[in-house]
Image 1 (cartoon, rainbow, N blue to C red):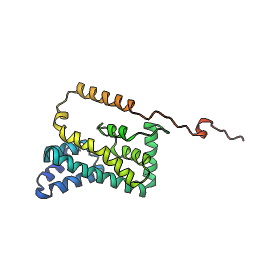
Image 2: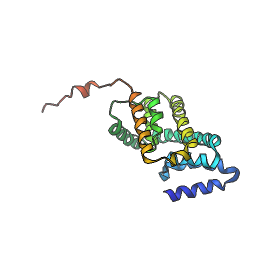
Image 3: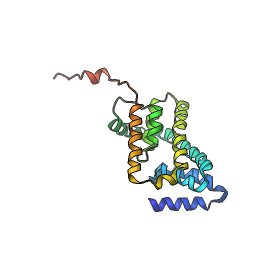
Length: 192
């Protein structure tokens, strides 16, 4: 995977005027090659600088979110599978807030499109989904593009402390209500 990622970045570097378009395309094909969003954003900062890299990453990630929205509408089996995974990881009746999703997107090992599914659940329509998606994508692109070199030089202890602080912040910002459906609370048994 790392070799493939380096190969793609070499193509983007030699792309000349088409390099930004190639970089945005890499964001779109990223899920097919299991490349982490963080890797692409850090590479954008290295290749284009902080400002341009952030702009290109925001465009690429947002287009990727649009494609996810389209594919999830066309593929109900994939949608059900992702929903089951989300329910196992987060809980059946819990919904994340946009702020929590924004913070979770900053953690590299949490699946990007699983968080997009959480956004889809709390959005009322496509426009609301895109607004929430853009809000959650901007910090991701900005932080990993601008601080990419710094993150690669952190010691494992600093990484552990940063992730612990981030998880505590996510817990503190959680939604404070729990919804339990009537059927789940009073489990009815069928009489034979």
